[in-house]
Length: 191
Ligand code: AMP
Image 1 (cartoon, rainbow, N blue to C red):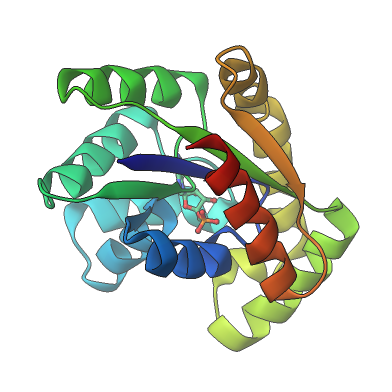
Image 2: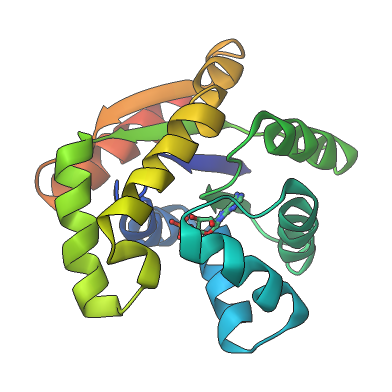
């Protein structure tokens, strides 16, 4: 069973690459951002709560995010493994994910980070925002805030996974297929 974290700043291509990884290794892809956006579109209680944070480019509080992630994992008890995309984003989330997986006699296999410069990411996000209409992709100050949240709260996870020998970094620019190959190489050499 492969349980993979796709890691990287907003716009680094986690969602795009998750689609290829999911197909090749037959994994369930869980994007916490996508689950939140789905809940916003359905105007659920969770969606209404998440919206106010997401629109500002801030992280949704850990309590609801962790609970939501656990519910998503529990939906497919017979999965061959998971790709976590956009989760964990704080040390508390990472610790809770480890605990949750241990209870199921599972663990994180590896974390693969897509490394892309913030300037390139900003251009990518602005262009994505034009197509998708995502509010948090259309405003430079919100994008800046998302990078700040990453640098303050999420980047510490690099050490968290590095200390467990589970952290791998790849160059996240170039052709989409080249980037996928880099990810496949990391997975194949470490499972
Ligand atoms: P993403 O689609 O991964 O870029 O996430 C979009 C937004 O959803 C983020 O800016 C956060 O507001 C929220 N979000 C997604 N995943 C998490 C998470 N693991 N913890 C807290 N907030 C999250």
